[in-house]
Image (cartoon, rainbow, N blue to C red; front, side):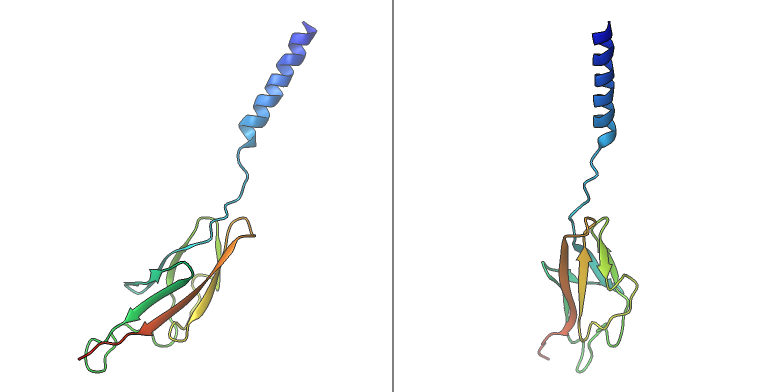
Length: 121
């Protein structure tokens, strides 16, 4: 009877640890998933975010972001980004984003820039 009680207690303790233990491992995902300025969605590469604007007329660059803009960015779940979302940036000169994963160790840097492409008229 005493052995059965000790065995039962060990089973309960083991089941309690495995059921409640769960995974407390934090994610190492650190990606920019989407990047938009107004209605223009930029191309997200392995370490860059870019869009090449083309002329729409003799001297017109429709939608080219002059000065500062506030992009709409989505990143990996649990990750953080510097500069923070909602920050005004100048994509004409470019900006570097650092996305840090939830684990606090993994990170990835992205350069973001809007560029004027060439187009013959």
